[in-house]
Length: 115
Length: 114
Image 1 (tube, each protein chain N blue to C red):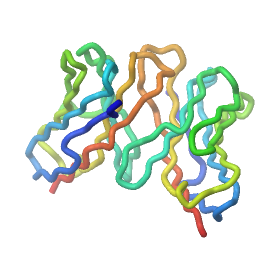
Image 2 (cartoon, chains in turn brown, blue):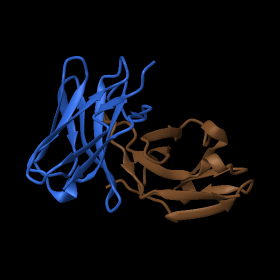
Image 3 (spheres, one colour):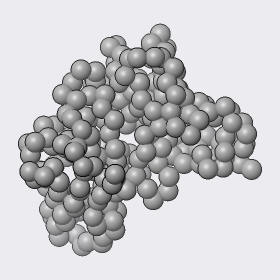
């Protein structure tokens, strides 16, 4: 079964520092991959998605992610953290070519940004 | 364009009761799916509807059910509530039933079972 693993349930960075949130998928066939952000008491907001076009995907709020098939990874990065980036981030996967919108989520990474 | 709207936002129920949660998808979106979010289990897929038919179901007991109406609005129902059903229930919508779609989430319905 398809799955994603997010390494690090809590990540803390200083304001202005690089943000790196890790996500690895399990499928031998590259799936579609998504990163969502959840602010306190809110729903999920899509940051970016990979659907087999460019391997470097740019998203909203300065985030980007690179799909690396050799490493089965889709890590999320942002060059310079802002206080407003403090939130929980979820990596998600869905099988390519399926007639379904079902997402399988990772366990999430809570990002703290220190002043 | 209005986003995914979920009602009610917050509710408290007693064990053994039932609850109905409502979701209005983004206008023009025909696919609706539901997720349960808890601290212990994370985000788990409940079910997916398209054209008033359940297309996919997660690994939840039969107490969890749902439906979709002809206007794409959806409801989910949980009967005989248990304490462990306390969770954030998220509805999501998408234009089509096709992997790779952008999926938009609502703010969620917070259910507390006491």
